[in-house]
Image (cartoon, rainbow, N blue to C red; front, side, top):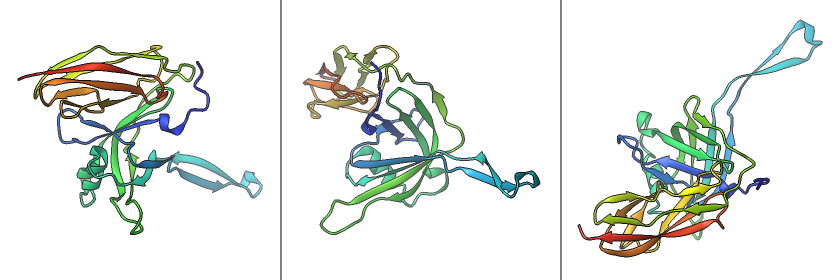
Length: 231
């Protein structure tokens, strides 16, 4: 199935909230966000030459991929809390990893600088504003997507984990070339939690379910059983 006119919500944005750690902790940038704009921040040289008959020529000599995110502040959201915590951090403390998976599976990933943080504010009887920018530093890594392939099914096996330990969901998307972007949610967070990578952590003994949903095509979703045993 051809993707065609994909909705903006089908883009998956993730930020590393532990840039100082050896392994990244990816958290989804989505909750509370209602506007995303991207630009090339291009540097353009405009020059006039004698053979131009009085008209100038333009050449793009450089640029920087910049994303502007705006919305409402949600306290307790891991991605927003991390970004807001960098308000008075400068230099290297404003840098982290960022990932953008487009509806066709095209992926940009690289080191960004978080800039122009607006942690909260607005009218007294309105939701608090929230906003920030991500500036990719240099050329991000690029993975080609497939605009002709839409997700049609998700498969995942049951997860068994001990209290205090972790296990991965590892879903598979069909067709194979479709976007791998999925979102996870746990029915009962008193039993277990799940992060943006699909890593389940046991909280207390019991059973619950994890929902895996395609970000590109939310109607494609499944649930897998999660069993947490005593430590």
